[in-house]
Image 1: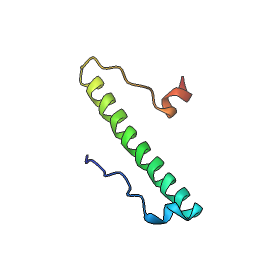
Image 2 (image 1 turned 120 degrees about the vertical axis):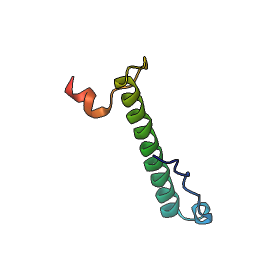
Image 3 (image 1 turned 30 degrees about the horizontal axis):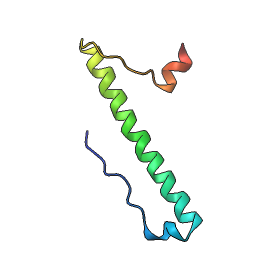
Image 4 (image 1 turned 60 degrees about the vertical axis):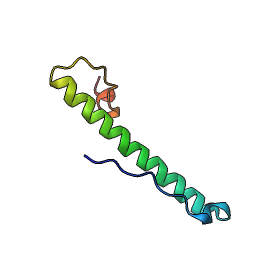
Length: 64
């Protein structure tokens, strides 16, 4: 596991709608990857016997 730096906003986002949208998509994907890591750690420590409350993943939510 590693900490991933947030995407850097290119200067073009001030003048290009396409660049702005691409940057927003990159930030959203970065955030989703980060929260997926948090969820994996939560489930790992929960399985190891720690008392932690984990949000179910979208996949787990659909199975219930």
